[in-house]
Length: 158
Image 1 (tube, rainbow, N blue to C red):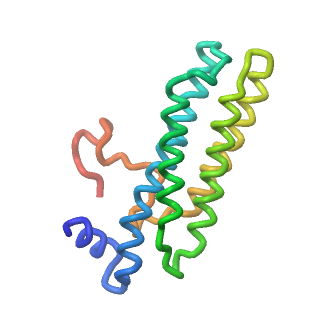
Image 2: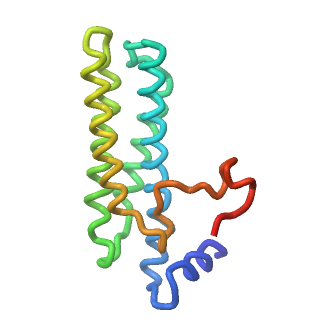
């Protein structure tokens, strides 16, 4: 109930119950996709810095794939209000780009590594741009949340 009241205050007195409920449910999907972007980007950096080009067996890849699958299930269950109708296709497209990046990394071999890194990076950039179009601080969808990071010194940013 606390999350509901906090979201109601964030959206304002004109926010509908459907929008508040949506904001609470989409937050998990959006947060997972955002985390996957960071995780896969970090994985690409790791692959390049270690010159480890056979990436299909990396445990991080399996973890990312599992998180992606869970997120797709959550996305399918979203009840999107008419006022946010554009969100679902953008989130689906972002998820598809993340999937393509995961596949590019899984197919990475020493002989074609640079092509796969470029392809994965291109898909991650496309996913990021789509997610930026879904961002709306009024319903808690932001690409970066520094409220619990070390740079906020334990303070809540307002």
